[in-house]
Length: 105
Image (cartoon, rainbow, N blue to C red):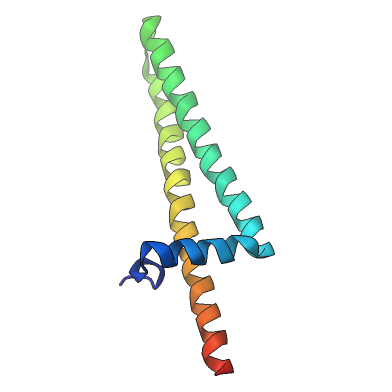
């Protein structure tokens, strides 16, 4: 099932994003989602650094893989969750705002 947000055109998406991020809830949610994505990117880069550093120094063993693979998986989950939550929050905002406007009419 498609979200209401996904069925909008590019211009409508930009307008709804702008109105959502101008609200206090939108500002705080945007900060949280950016922080979540930033944490995922940093974790992924640290895991890549550990792997490449161990490969260059020729001391790759099972402990390297046991520590870096869960870190990479968690980082990918963080990055994807930030995008999924962003779309869900925008969709909930659009649905609530449209209900407010239809009740007033």
